[in-house]
Length: 265
Image (cartoon, rainbow, N blue to C red; front, side, top):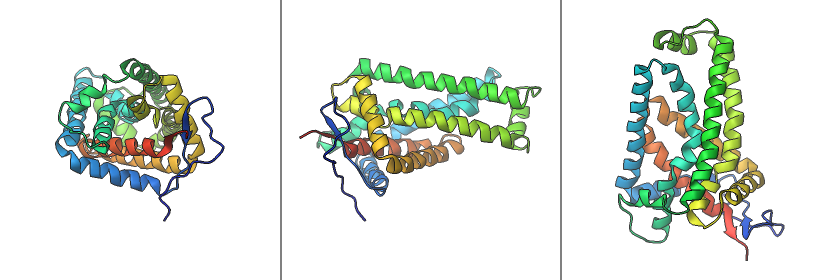
């Protein structure tokens, strides 16, 4: 099994001082193994980070229920992957410090946002626009397939999960969501950790991310599938699984970045 990275002589990132490495299909497993090692090295910080978003998700769900807009829970849960790259910035900082042998404590994740904060804001705005677009599209799709279904908790759950009529709705929704998720993945898979690691602009980081995903499209497709599966597993049990899957994917994403982006020699 090959687990080495190679940088081809024809580098794609001509406009930047960064080269894109070509990696094998086995690398996502290596990233996960390194992410797990980071979690074991800083368990309190990693699991605490995940638990914070578990509590936040539960509180948001309860709020939507109280406001009688529970139908937004499904698109918001699915759309979590759109903003997850920016949400995990604190985890990237933990992995960055561990790799350098620097101490890590509860103050480490918040400090990450102070590095290149303006560019994080730009990337976050881009990802938020994708999330808002997805919520709007998902609502319109539901209205198209179920125009006379009241958007109440009982009827919504029965219609979406316990009706044969929901099959085409779910297929169309998942198809459109997958297209949007692929765009977000190309934009943010590498750019978010790169903004933390280097003093660069969001546009440059996004360009490098797209190049890295395009050059390693098979490996990155596999990585995207793994991320979707781990995230779905975390969400399906009332967000509790995110306490494990969010930090694991976050730490692993840092190692994906360090594998794929290298300085030009």
